[in-house]
Length: 202
Image 1 (cartoon, rainbow, N blue to C red):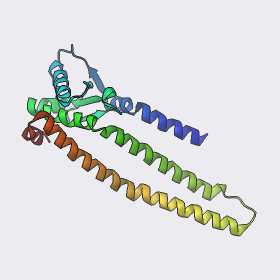
Image 2: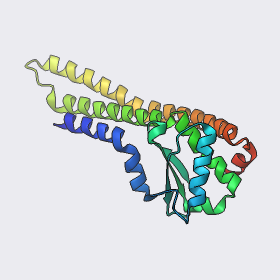
Image 3: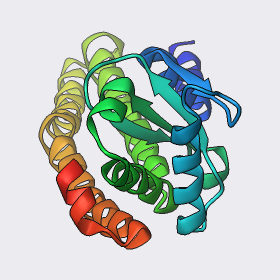
Image 4: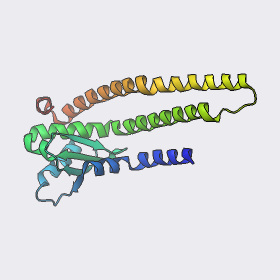
């Protein structure tokens, strides 16, 4: 049952992770006929056109912090979310640069890569937990020596998984994230043809 529940949760996260993220952020979608944010929608639409991508769904987050992110496994189911803070504080060219940066993440399939990494990490964490529980409670044999050897092997495997999850995985995610951010900066500057505005916004 535990394995089925875990796999079910991973599938749900993969299928609905973007919606869960937007709901957690308190984002609400805007449409082309939204008077208050019509210019924001048009800005996203124009940047998407310049990038050669479908126009993503556009969301506004009622938060004064300066933040923006993109979600969606493919360009056709992508979304871009912007906080009110970043909309208020950046001028049009800077905001276009931020939107282009997020569109670059969509076009480069960075969100799908990140979701795959998160799902993979979940699998290794779950595997480590199963191995530890098996070592502690499930290794029943009639021979004490066999039991001790089996437990020792399982604990060594668990230790390897734990080291990977606690040390190797964060380093891998950091390296991949930094690389993809640099790529998104370069692509965003190429889309807007205005690297100075993007640099100023960042």
